[in-house]
Image 1 (cartoon, rainbow, N blue to C red):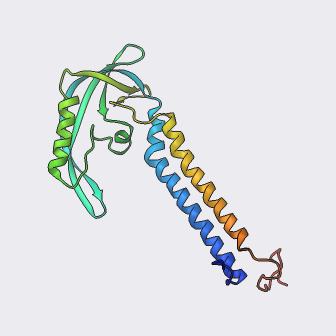
Image 2 (tube, helix red, strand yellow):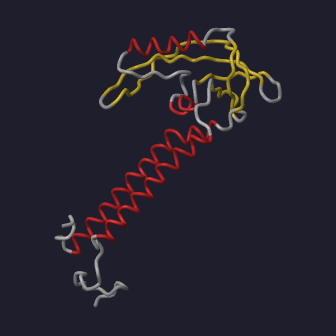
Image 3 (cartoon, rainbow, N blue to C red):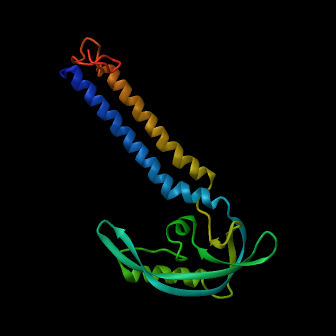
Length: 209
């Protein structure tokens, strides 16, 4: 015997509506979250062009407060690495180095982000970045923003395929959830037939009967 067979038509209708709404809310929330965290910085990073950077300074600003999880707050040292590079007109420009698109989007005030519960671990992580990419006179490949010459990336982690997968799979999940809900509703007749509908004091046009 099916799980819905003993339900009244009104109850079936309510259950299916809740299932459909819950699935849609879950999928839409996932799309929004991934859009903010990945797609937004990924699309922004598409404009950055490759070049070669030379470190001119590396200094520590005031420590930055950050969240390391639920009810967890800590600080991290804020390293600012400044570099020079050649733009597409072969002019020399100066910009602030950021590790990747996510760092630029979420932590634009610092070149590198490390926000764990341990202050010592954060210091070690930022120091590693400084030792590898913050030595004055050091040269390495990087990417700059032609529209904002002060924005420089050490690497680009997102490409068009990443954007495609991030948007495609949650959208597919949304479609599958809607399809499964429709199949279940059809199997157990989770709609309200006209003869089963509760009496109403209003016509279908909203006019009192």
